[in-house]
Image (cartoon, rainbow over all chains, first blue to last red; front, top):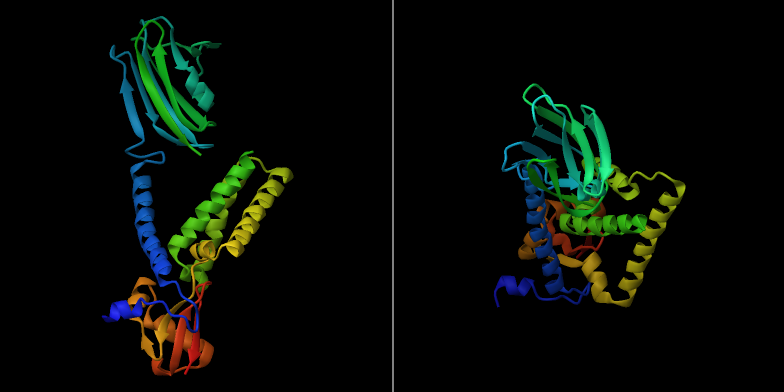
Length: 170
Length: 146
């Protein structure tokens, strides 16, 4: 029997040991440390909101709608979203924020204020005035209220639409 | 409902995290560890209460934490194995004046830690004077001299 095996035998005096269980606990501590490092690295990468993994931009096939948003959110936290939409020049156009989004989030702030807004079965309709080319940019701050995955979509009435999938951590 | 879930989640998370950080983290607290503990407390507070600062919520959270704590202590009394899983068991690291180095390595204990405990507790000069050094369940090293 080598020294390692000799050392790892259970002693009965002065304390009753269970060295096999104790070694499992030590291994758990060691493995746990790697998990903690992984969590820190993934947080830096943005798995828990704000970072490379979280920030994303989607563009509609018609190229008339661009949405910059965060995939991952934390309950109670505030994240920004930028919606760039294009309608007919000189005319107001309407952006529709899908229902699922309104269930999981509440709007903390909205810049600029839309010309009008209406709650409809499809979601929240915001009517915006564009510039000379019909382009408008909407800055939103969302506060996360829900929990879990929210699959929603944002669309321009009579134009393109983009899927917006967001996950809210507890 | 969420008061219970919050308290339960934080209790379990803290238990696992302190288990990972090892017993010595709390057993031998330096002034920096104390500051760290304060920061952990501060970070936990918000998650425990959420945005509800009512007296009812605070009481619900406290009641839940105490219930889980008492529940675990009852569970530990009922099953020795569960108790060992949660608290660990005592481990001998010096036997008859000899370091058990494989054990010390796995437990992340240095010779200096043992000798410090020996000097502080028993006024012991060298390892030959130690019959047993034991890492106790609370993370402290106890010394039995020859």
